[in-house]
Amino acid sequence: MHDHLDDDKIWANSGDSHLVEPADLWRTALSPELADRMPRSEFDLERGIETIFVDGQSFERRIPKAFSLRDHEGNGLGERVGRGNDPVLRLEDLDSEGIWAELIYPSIGFWMSSIHDPELLAAGCRAINDWAIEFQAHSSRFVCTATLPLLTVETAVAELERAADLGYRAAYCSVAPPTAEDWTDPVWEPLWATLEETGLVLGYHIGTEPHDAAGFHGNYYRGPGGAILNYMETTYGGQRAVAKMIASGVFDRYPGLRVIVSEGGATWGPFVADRLDEAYRQHASAVRPTLSRLPSEYLYEHVYASFQHDRSAPAANWAMGWRNVCWGSDYPHLEGTFGHTQKTLHELFDDVDPATRRRITIETFEELFPHVPAAPGT
Ligand code: MN
Image (cartoon, rainbow, N blue to C red; front, top):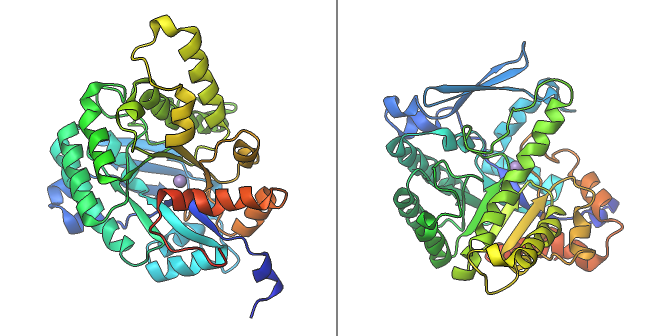
């Protein structure tokens, strides 16, 4: 039986979701000495400050206001993220929101990109990957991303191969590498080759720069407008990462590679493609390496993007011709769509033609992850 609401329900796959690592994750898997150096977070609700500790460093950031509010059932929103770690409660949440399959990233685990000890990082990656793959086993709707120890390409490739054997379909890299060699450097060739060989999709989630990476502007702005400007800055890392891969010919050499930029909006794709083509044509005499095709062709074919609230994002598909746009919920994060997913999906898609809506909400994700079951009614 269907009530009126069910008939109106829009189901969507999510190209941007998260697990929230339990506090005892590192202690369970690692020696106390190593566990103490892994990322952890402390909340000071009075001051509205979260402090992240990682390998002897500490970083402060403001806690979103919503964290201290209660939802309509009286649950603190901070407690809600705990539901996301219980596969049964998580699926309940997804079903009520209309979210079907999910590409799932870590949360505090992103801060591992600020670790400087290759052995600590490799051990931490094995621990988080062993834990997340167990979670993935609970439902074919979960597609978890493996974390790679990027301080050396050898450790990254070894963990990527192990992750593929464990059953991972995706791995993520921080948008900037934690090394002196940028994504354009030949040192990363074995990583691209292994990604292509294993068929894993590469994810870049915005805001994952190592804290001291060159060009990272996180927490740079202070004073009037700072919060907005810092958020805007987090957006560019994913665009830079894929532009570096395109410009240095990675997709020329590894045509089986596919990359998704999560949580970074979508209309940037056609814009960046135009700028890369302009550079390629107008500055051809300085361009190294030369490419077999125009930069935009690599972007339109090999690069995917997920957005959550961005009003202009569907037009990147129907008006600008970038097919690789998908939606993402950011569940269970506070800035995501939880609690208003259906409202968001209707606002985004009620005026969009059915084929475009289907492509963005369902098919783009299925193209990346054809093993996931079909969403209800599709
Ligand atoms: Mn996200």
